[in-house]
Each structure stands twice: as structure tokens, then as C-alpha cells.
Image (cartoon, rainbow, N blue to C red):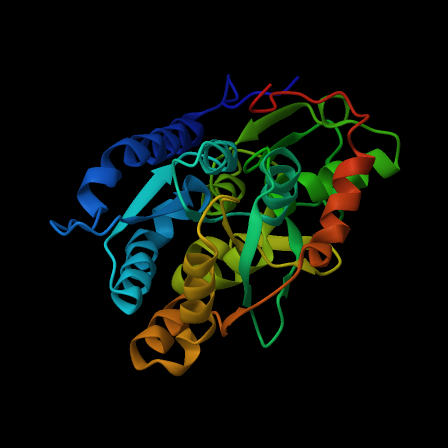
Length: 308
């Protein structure tokens, strides 16, 4: 059985629950605080950001939005929501214009709302990343499948690295998460998953390799309490997407701004802070590996799946 909050745990879980609640509260209060206001007649560009990234990158997210607005000379509204499901629904209803989402959220959003790709980030010169399975550094578990019957953390039900990849591994063994694990929690952010493992609230978690590596630089004491026991194959990096009905010239301008970001003094500083090289144009078939995995796990009994 899956839970968004696991019961009967000791004090560290209370701390994690408080952090998750903080993330949810931030999604409510940050819109008015971080919207870029304008009294002009220009229609604002509305940019969606999820809570999966919000807590550790809030100022950077705001600065990227401001950077795009400054280069396009338009006002920007940065809209924060708790998960990818909320964001793709808003794109489908034309309530936001572009969004930073995960590859799995994209392929689902493409199917439901015909979302369009804008760009993909690049890391170490390539637009790829991995899913990591992490456990406490003192754990005797040496592999993902050693975690049978234990507590496990996912991030978001539409996360590729934090949900779909481990689900696919289980499906290949004829297993489902609710049978394989003793208890499951959704932490809402990769950083929260790292903390949950470091504090031994859970025995393991699936996280974004980019987030884990970045966290190792900014919070080495925390991350040193975890260890990677399994790495996935390379997957397409989480993209920037746009709603289908957004004017083509606006999509083209946003793409141009992001693709030239690494050559701009201000843009290159922002990229350096988040450990990315820049952005490149990609096509829909680039995300086929994630699409294929999603199709293969559809037969599993889905649980605690948002939007159902």
C-alpha cells in the first residue's frame, strides 16, 4: 500500500513531513511574492515551476524567469505548484505558457494536451542524466532489489528518475511497488528524498542524478550519509515545454533566449550556479525511451497516482 506520508515513524519523519508541508505552503505563497509585476499592456509570460525543484532552487528559478523576461522585454509571472501533474494540467488549460518539467511528465502531457518541446538542458556537454538508487551510507543493502520489504521514497508520480525508472525495474521482474515494498512515501522533492535516506526515515529512494550530484557540492555533510547502489542507463534530461496554443513566435523567442544563455554574461553565471552547460533544441522522439517505459508499466496496478 502506498502513502504520501508513512505512519508510525520516529521524530525524523516528523521533520520530513514538516518540510513537505513547507513545500506545499510555498507553492501557495510564492506566486504573489515572485511574480514580476508590470503596469504595461504587454501580456505576461507565465512560467510554471514544480515543487520538485522549488525548495533548493527557488531564487535560481526566479532569476531564470526574470532573465527570460528581460531578454524578451516582457513581464513574467512565475507560477509554483506542488507537482508535475498540476503543471501539465495548467498547460493544458492554457493557464501557463511554458514550464520546466520532467521527461515522464512531458510524454504524458504530450499525449493528453499535445505539449510542445522548447529546449532541453545539457549537463557535461550532453542532454542526459540518470536515476540513482540511494541508501544510507551505513546500509548493508547493495542493490535496488535488496530493498524488498522495506520503506522506500519516490518523489512525484510523474517523475522519470524518481518514480518511473524504479517502477519499470520492478515490472521487468513481475513485481509492483505496493507488493515489493513495505511502505512507500512521496517526498515531493529529490532533495527531500536525499534527506529521508540520510536520516534513515526510509531504507532507499530513487533520485535524479543531477540533483544528487549538485547536492553533494552544496550540502556535502548531508549527502555523505547516502550512497548510490544502482544507476540507470542515460535518459533525456527534463525539458522546458510550452502549451500547444502558445504563439509560435513566442516559443521561438524563448528557445532562442535559452539556447544563447551560455553566451550571455548574466546567463552563464546563472547556469554556473546550477551546474548546467546550457540548452539545446530537441525533438519529440528524443523522449521515446521514457515513453516506451511508461507504456510498458501501464499494466501495473497504479497506486496513489495523481490525476486519477
